[in-house]
Length: 198
Ligand SMILES: C[S@@+](CC[C@H](N)C(=O)[O-])C[C@H]1O[C@@H](n2cnc3c(N)ncnc32)[C@H](O)[C@@H]1O
Image (tube, rainbow, N blue to C red; front, top):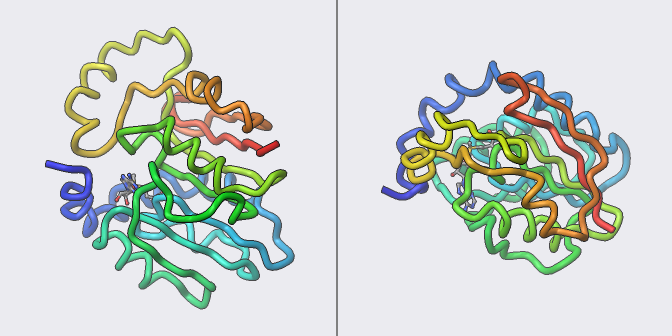
């Protein structure tokens, strides 16, 4: 079963499972977007659009996701935002380089089968000086985490990877500089990171 299949099944219950627990971390991460101006912002792996209520209303947003059932729910959450939706793969974004002022990547870098490609693609479509907001679960360098690594054997095929070390990805993405890194949930397994493209 592919991630697209499982997220199609997951879509009707996604909000009930994820919305409440993730709300404070989303609000905090998205508060780092500029509140003024008209900027181009990509929501990579937008899902059901749980980020939308926290976005500054003046900007132009593009939401991309692999799963049509998730995108339909995001569309219903537009609430007046300038939001274009597209079906596509975050590991090979269908956008030219330097297209966006900021990229939001909440619960997507460690979800796709290719986290490094996902991070590199986000960096590619960012303008120099633009920021990338990442919220996800990452192991620390050298962390054994035997239970998570075992669960990952199944979870990577049906929902998310659990074995991703963010520092390993960052070492391969020199155009990104880490500006902040805060633990937000589950004893620091979930982290909120802000990166800036040079
Ligand atoms: C855990 S949900 C996160 C959704 C949303 N960003 C949030 O914070 O609630 C993961 C989303 O990534 C999507 N997805 C999985 N693999 C993807 C890929 N390779 N490209 C684009 N979207 C993908 C799924 O369809 C799902 O909507």
